[in-house]
Image 1 (cartoon, rainbow, N blue to C red):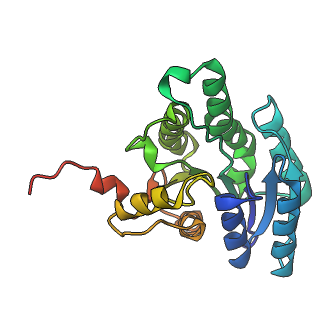
Image 2: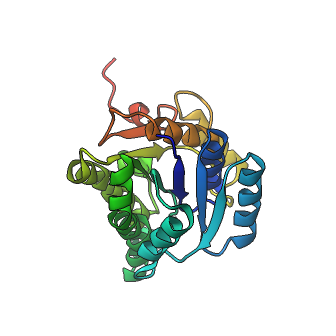
Amino acid sequence: MTARRALVTGAATRVGRSIALHLASAGWDVAVHCHASRQPADEVASQIRALGRQCRVFAADLSQDDAAAELVDATLDAFGGLELLVASAANFERVELDAVDAGHFQRALALNLVAPFFLVQRARAALARARGSVVLVTCSSATTPFRNHLPYVVSKGALSHLTRVLALELAPDVRVNSVAPGTVLPPLDMSQSAVARLAASVPLARAGTADDVAAAVLYLATAHYITGEELRVDGGRTVARVERFD
C-alpha cells in the first residue's frame, strides 16, 4: 500500500491513544475519534502531526444511531480513502449481577458491539478498494470471564465472534482480526494492591501496557495473510485459567 490512512475510535486516551500514536510512528495518517475527551484528542493529534503525519479529530457519540456511519463518512471526506479501521472505543461499567438492568446491556452492546459493526459496514467499500483491514479490540474476558462486569463481558464475547463472521463475509477484499487485551491498564479506581495481585496471577508476572496492545494492532494491520483471528495480549492469562493435570 502506498497510502496508509487509519481511523481509530476511542483514540484520545488509554489504549486507543497508544494505537493512534504507534500507527503514526509507523507512517500512517490517523483520524482520531473521541466522544467527550476533546482536549486529550487534540493533544494526540498534535503529537501525530509532530511525527509528520496527517491527522484530523472527529467527535462522535458512537452509541447513537447513525453516528458510526457519519464518522466514517467524515473520515473519508477528509482523507479520501481508508486502509485501516480500528474499533477501540468501549463501554466498561462495573455492576454486580443483581443490579444489572436493561440500561447496562443497552449501553454495553451499543458501543462495544453495534457501533463496530456499523463502522465496518460503512467503511467496507473504501477498505475493499484499498485491500485494507479491520482490527477490533475485544477482551480476554471473552474467553475467561471475570465477575461484576456481565454486560461488558457478554458484549466483548459477541464482538469476538463478530470478528470471525465479518472475516468470512468480507473476504477476500478486507481482512478482519481482533486484539484481546488481558491485564492491561487496570481501571483507575483499582487499588495498587489489587493491581499487584492481578499481575502476580499472570504467567509473565506483570501487567501489560497500552503499547503492548498497540504493537499487536500494528502487526495485524500489515499481516496480509491473516484474517478471522484474535490475538490475545494477556501475558498468558488465558492459558493460566486452563485446567492443569500435572
